[in-house]
Length: 209
Image (cartoon, helix red, strand yellow):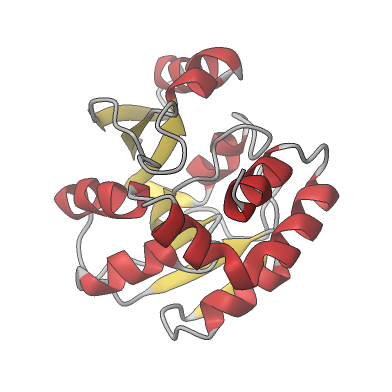
């Protein structure tokens, strides 16, 4: 197995936020090369393609689970300028900061309360963070709280995780509770065609009410 594949599996096997944070800190320097080059990671661009259909270029945006800023690169290329980065790993945020894409940086983990004001953001984007062993489905409660009414939460989600990890129930419950409504859901695609062709994602876009 290639070293890049070993690192990805090692991160997936994390058993706690602390474990995940430590492993991402260690992976940060090699992350872009491993994902973009070795795996041909395309979810940031696919999510951005959906994002630009729904979100104004002047929007104040939170990149939740920003990592090294691969999503930020796509958003800035598309004309967005007001970006905040949030990640549980300081090492990953340091890599993102070196790219001069974001206006602020916040070390926080999804799944608990977030230190942001209610209705603080016009939109939230989260790519690659709702996957095996990562942010839980209840993360959406706080993301909806910090997003203005009429704003959007757009994210990638592993198809198998949607069924098995409580996301389907969480997303449906929030629709039924009139917290958000589905604006768009893409077809399934392979986000890691070169590295993990067996993994399939969709991009989801919800409008907060």
